[in-house]
Image (cartoon, rainbow, N blue to C red; front, side):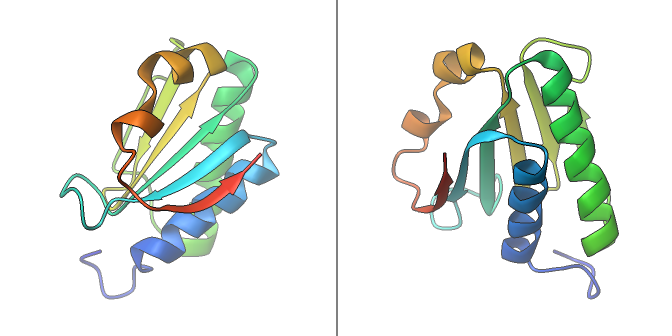
Length: 121
């Protein structure tokens, strides 16, 4: 992160995981991309059972990260439906999927060389 007061990217990723778990996200996965990509340091991938839950997970992440880490998302996509919401914190990118969309895009296979730091069923 560029701001001196901003949390390190792993602390940010852990805050995202905690917030997603609080909103009952399923199959939460934290991938370490630091040695594989310049896109982000970490991906957090999780699922929700409905569009409504996806939105609740995204909003919960935004609120908790703002409260704990004092930063806002750089960019958010997919809040209007489509089965996939992306919340971009630059160093940490969050992918919140409906199960069918998660299976279709299969980010776990695409980033299969990334170390899995956390997997929560």
